[in-house]
Length: 68
Image 1: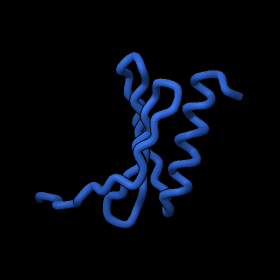
Image 2: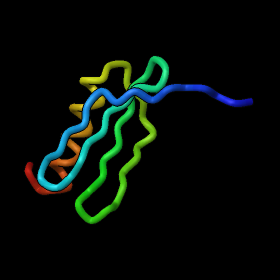
Image 3: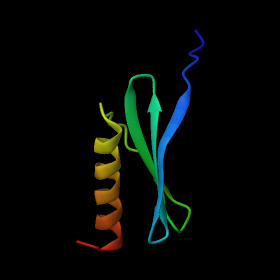
Image 4: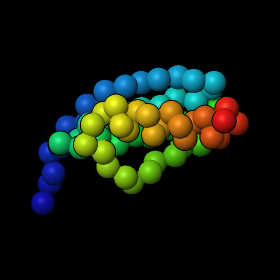
């Protein structure tokens, strides 16, 4: 079975050397973070709103860079 789901980027945010990508596949939203050293963080959680995924992703970046 071939799934033809289109990925649509909702947010592309750079902060302190990290890039947050929030995207939609179907009805749900997810995020990924690419860090300055090339490492990639891809959580499997799904969100019902893009803003929710964005906020969780930004908090993840803040934790890693020691902002909090």
